[in-house]
Image (cartoon, rainbow, N blue to C red; front, top):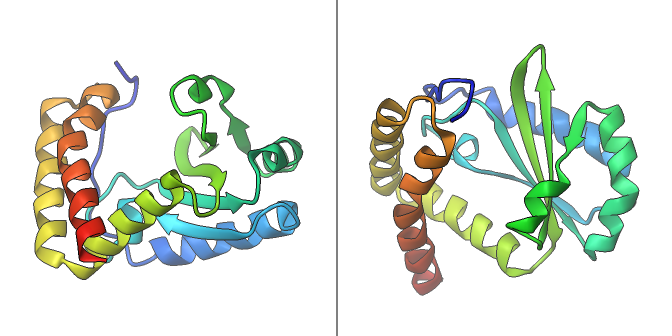
Length: 173
């Protein structure tokens, strides 16, 4: 069980600006190692309620480049979480907490690989299909209510929906 209750906030029109500001800081710190930075997750979809944490996807040519990014990102307040590589070896995961509140997740992956394309396809599909985004919002609210203190169960509860939308996004493109 997580220590912090899962809160789904109404869409904040400032989330894109928060992403842009953080992207500037990241590019200043590790710009030589990254190819692109994308805003992903629910905070990247206009009008979609979300946990108020900015999810970012940083594309690198090779995951070997991530090693050079750890120290500069730590100086920006990011914590590198290598234990998550046991579950997702294709990703390097960083999280940022400010004043005891999680503010950002940074997923560093190879540009163009499956993780990269899948996350962008999901985001883009929700942006292009507001009714599906509304369906996702209702699911997230229900799961947050049922699993208020269990982030694992909350996340697992979204899996079927996410996989369905990823399949639909692939057939739409």
